Image (cartoon, rainbow, N blue to C red; front, side, top):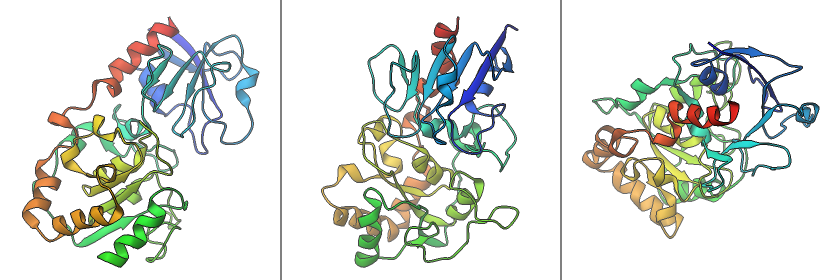
Length: 302
């Protein structure tokens, strides 16, 4: 196998350089070595720590990745992985939700970010029975986007969701990791907690075409119906009959009516939760399949 030297800088806290999507992807074809001084390829993100380590590296292929609603700066990078529906040959759409699947059969490690939560094969095979004891779950910390108004509207017009994040918290510290500490929003404890609910409020911090993060797929991992808002092109990623897309309705009140109808009709609820695949024709979109992402990378790496 050909050896390739890579490095990662300006990523989120808890990022592990030898266990992340891009490292594991390249390792399927290359002997990957982390070189923090003279890499062939540099991956960098949105500078979460305000350190701008990217500025230290000039003589290498520089690749920008964003899971945030941030566009690439082409003065800083050669190619980019983003959420955008771009026609630029340097930019590849790899939405953040795709990185939360365990494509490479790595063991779960609660210390890492973007944990290997669910194997692809497990995710694609929905449960055969409906076992849900509670109405709706919601986990968020930031008072941003439609969630700010929707959660109170749902509570006022129908039922109050269980809120386990800092925003509208009404259940206390229920999301605890194996050490009894409050878990992060990307960990399996969120998925386990969410699995008791029929619905999950999965709303982004902001609305932008293509901006589809882990929120919708975490609800799906819990086999709860996502109540989604964020990207108005989300139905290009997922089967529109498997979730509630707020962008299709004129108001929050209309969305609540849809939720009420499903909540009170077990047949319709079971059809959505058990029989509708998460993806159209139960096939993950070609663009996020690892072999196609690697093909794009190889064009530039080589």
